[in-house]
Length: 315
Image (cartoon, rainbow, N blue to C red; front, side, top):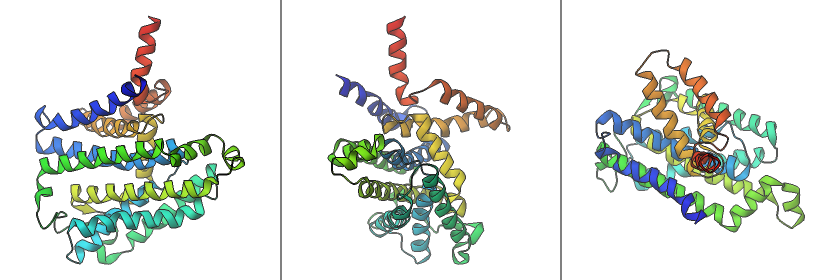
């Protein structure tokens, strides 16, 4: 019963996203907004695997997202847009960056880990800004979206919406399978007490490094999708502020379950758009709302149904 109850919320969210184009979100701008929310949800899922699964708080996750996007740029400039080439290149480049930097960063912990991931991200940020062949600080406009077997159907907004939804569901399923596996159990045990895990014969380092690399590959996938959604890539994709946004999405959604990252991403994207429609000073409202959400939603948005059930029982 508890397992079915836990699966109800993510299935409901995915079902609502599937039905959204027929529930008043079928206009071009609305579909673009939902696609952005789902893409950031994919990136946030990768970060949740680190924060919620392994206890590694990274401030450099946007670097992997940006590297995935710039892989699309490099191939686009070379006249290559086929997904069979672009997808593994974007995910592979981001995963390789995660592997190389994670090999150093994971040897540390706490604030040292946060600062090292931030430092590597800033290095990547300034490197992309110096790539004059790909627009430098001004960014790069794609010649066209990624094709699938030569077909350009991802250029259709509705088709792209369902592509993002399918990949979001696949990444969510991957995170849940990883958590339920022996790999995930060791990862979570090391999060609680790394010394105890070592005492029973497991070295947490390779498990954390693999998780960091997988999270990088997931962020690379999100970078590919974001590049296609905007048809424009700039160094700002790698900025530390975007890493902070992704981290806040994970925290707002809740660290107790991976689907919390999706809820956090969608909530922030939709709330930003809604408040911006009221006033140009919407950030003055947005900030305090997020602070209140963190203070009073201790389990995040994913834990809200459980909190409501507890209140009803007490009432």
